[in-house]
Image (cartoon, rainbow, N blue to C red; front, side, top):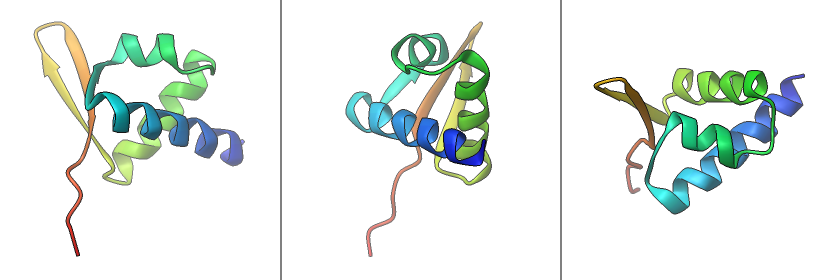
Length: 70
């Protein structure tokens, strides 16, 4: 299961890398995984500090955290 979550997290990362910021329902539509697996992957990315969640009114937006350059 960890492998599936990791692969879904990679798909989310790639999508956000192209789109900058997306509403959570839009991610659910564009990621080819179940809702449950997508939410687990998002949780992983949030916990690891790779994405930021922002709530605006009744919508939840997701974006990649700004990367620090070396």
